[in-house]
Image (cartoon, rainbow, N blue to C red; front, side, top):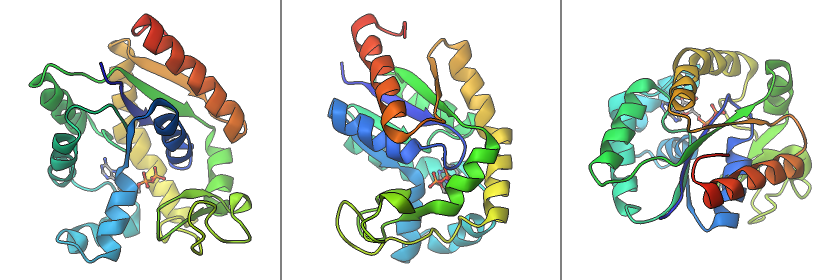
Length: 220
Ligand SMILES: Nc1ncnc2c1ncn2[C@@H]1O[C@H](COP(=O)(O)OP(=O)(O)O)[C@@H](O)[C@H]1O
């Protein structure tokens, strides 16, 4: 059975960095909804006007819109394993995902909650850059003199990574996404992972959790 994972955690907790590593290691597809939305903005796609003010103020995009975006992606990855970074972020999105998978006899195998104190997150946000070409994202210190380590394009700060925007996103996380984390805890599908250490240490920790998932069902 392909592995289906969701990554949960506050802004800058490392969902993108760790999500890509997990996907690469396990041979899974990876989707960042945040990157998808930023691409939509840059390409002036059909929902660009709707989402522009929402992203600018650090709010969450409407559930209906998010589910409409997710449906074709899920459909085109129906028989694949995947790592979702940024979805579901609300109870309604979690209901949608659960229904969609259930109709196909599938389910989320585990949710990984990356835990980092808020004081550390703010520092990470201030140092974060993203590549406009391949959407690699990481700390400025990981770039090659400002160039993306993956494709070489010039990486720069995200427009939504100011302090005020971060604080609003953090509030949205506490209000909407924490209850989703609690849902997975009640379903006994939650892996809580201390994500304060360096990238390699957190990646090794996650790899151990995921290995034990694959070999013992959900008993990680
Ligand atoms: N599932 C979602 N539901 C609502 N809004 C979303 C969702 N995924 C992404 N977004 C929007 O995209 C923004 C950026 O997301 P992301 O790149 O994951 O950054 P972060 O996790 O640092 O907030 C969010 O602040 C929100 O406005």
